[in-house]
Image (cartoon, rainbow, N blue to C red; front, side, top):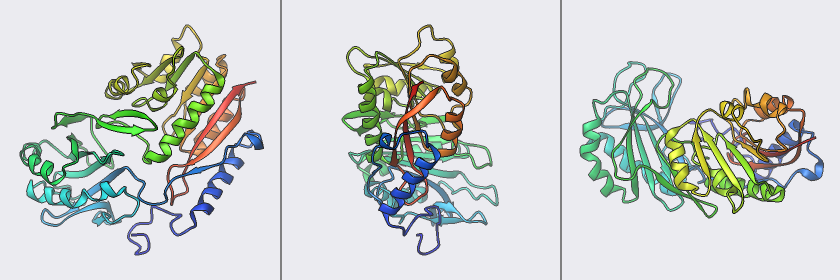
Length: 364
């Protein structure tokens, strides 16, 4: 795809993987110079191809010849089903999904004409090869047809576990809407990650690279165990990845997440922890006891008001996982009382300039 000039999203494609990793490590060291030289753990990388566990496919083209991929500058479909970054089991599902669009007569959404129904196919694969497929529709017009033909898709994809329809009526570059209709008995996808099984509901966040996510959680647990905290707050906890790996006898872990569905899944994933639905900044302002360790894995924009609370609090240690160096740098500048003492680059996104950076902060 890259060599043919069809897709240029992976800006580092063609560059040696070791060079990519070294460049990401050097960029992180330069951005966070407060970490001692011996505080940087060796960077971690998984496979350079076949690593993506999730596909966000724009559906375009015609009913008889749908394209699954992206849109060009004119809003027309560009098929990317041959992209080498998808996990093999994920890529193997695309042919049946393309046939399903035609069989169920779900007209692909034509962006320039503002006509059609099917906007996206969102497909996730577990380490065991199980699939979750979500159809993002403009309206409920095709909902009955999706449900009617779902038995065919189950037969074509024996690994299909969760199927749902998401309704996104707005003509805008918005991936999904608020309404989700689950069409299968199972409503979550089981993801084995580093000895822990997490449960993903349709509208939940999960790291795109399962192998690197496992190392991220393992590293966080090792650093946390070295601190021996008894009271941990996992903010922006999602489906409970960090909480599940940090939970231990004698340690009270509380996860906070705005999504009620993610919280419900986290309770299944990490029964040894406690989870609450709410805003992270509001939750910490209501605390009567300060945690020994706060874990944050914020959205790309960073911590926002939470950085000021952490700065003014007496929290002794913070584990900060970031996918966006500029946000991390800005948040660290807003928390000068918390000194970065350890860090590690994890190559969550090979073939791009992006990486995950895990930083351990200690109050001075």
